[in-house]
Length: 171
Image: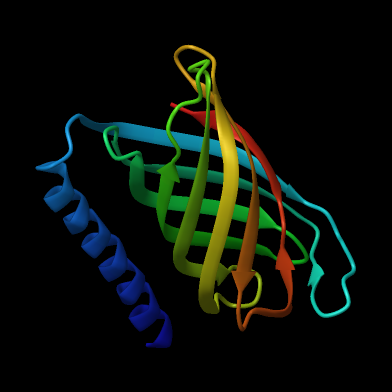
């Protein structure tokens, strides 16, 4: 029951964010599909209060990009291997800073909110949140995406967080 309520809440957040996309799209043309995939690697870094946990993950996000305002919103999924393999489903948003003078690079700041689940321990569901900073380098048909994420999963991982370096493609 608890798992069903949590998954329903995340789906509601995703639906509400897409409703906001529909309302925003009337003011902001052109709007087009944007997808991204990345590999994220988090090292172990012992810190005094919280430590970062080692992990590797595959992440993908798909949604709508509002070119005029620089906003992206969509739904993302991630499979992470750490001490225990977990998955995440999230609502994902990014703000892209204006294109640099050379026209090839642009920075971004983003956030993800959703749920995670653990296959190994019978499928407990937990909160998943992430903040990210990075930049993209235009390579023609695709952009190279380089960035840093800070991922939190309370109460599942209450004494650590993940700080992966990400490399991927935006298409």
